[in-house]
Image (cartoon, rainbow, N blue to C red):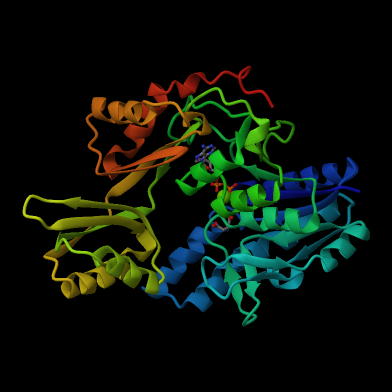
Length: 414
Ligand code: ADP
Ligand code: ASP
Ligand code: MG
């Protein structure tokens, strides 16, 4: 029998009624001939509430204790889903990451899955169970400590399980009907995408489109695992199929617009213009495990440089501290930090070989009087750092300029 992995996000299990809906979707899949593995997130805002609680207790939570705390959210939802399945007359068993054997790196808050033991799950499936697995959590193979995979990480648990079990597909059930051309919360007339390539989805997710965890798309792409993003409130609706680019027709240069509100900008000013400085700055940040995203270096009239870069808001305090130490070392004149920035991006495999796409984006921002602070491009994306207050205005303007509200259904062939 083919295996199907179904993942349900926080909104999809926010209360008893929703949990019963999840049980119905899972049992329907079993009735349709699948062996079913269900991955669930914590109920509603549970994870946010746990984070708030930790912050009330301490400014800097201990990473081990923090992961142990956060992993409890999913531990509540899994038995509830299993019980709701029992109530429908079906067999189910819940499993934490530890019980399954979801092994990760020895890193807290953003661990990567390194291995998943499948024997136990396969046995439970063979006995006719629907196996309900806690998303977002694993154990360090080195220490046996509980780890978490980063916010939104249940998507990654689901895809990794689908790959490890050789599933036919991984369905991600969420609170929107599909992947849209941008966040439908920002642009009401955003268009639904019938299909999207792994490459584009990976860029969109990495650039702030919360609908999928970037690592989940990376794993799906590497192992060619088809994923469907669909609504747990409209289970008949097929949603969006995320698949290999070779199978797609690319009609529009731009497939989507994303807004990332999670970054901050740090700049070192008055940097002496000599070789080796950038290496020194970024080596020191890397040593402290601080990931840097966009980097821009510019030279001013007096012959000194400004090196600006963006980091996760979570790490901005540490990054600023390290940067100030380096600035002193290299005799730069100062460091500025700005948390009031966002990154707006366009993504589209169809922009390859089509000039003028970036220019059209910049013009849309200029026509809306939005100042661009930093720019970065790759083959299939263009990103601009702008002021936080302009974020949603920018998304709306860019979405309009590329006519993404008019992406026609007929064009989106599967
Ligand atoms: P879940 O709790 O099910 O994991 P998330 O909140 O993580 O759900 O992701 C779903 C949300 O992603 C939607 O409610 C929507 O606001 C947001 N989102 C951002 N960009 C997009 C997009 N391009 N398409 C669909 N949803 C998007
Ligand atoms: N519960 C975790 C979070 O809120 C993981 C997830 O929902 O995917 O980030
Ligand atoms: Mg999510």
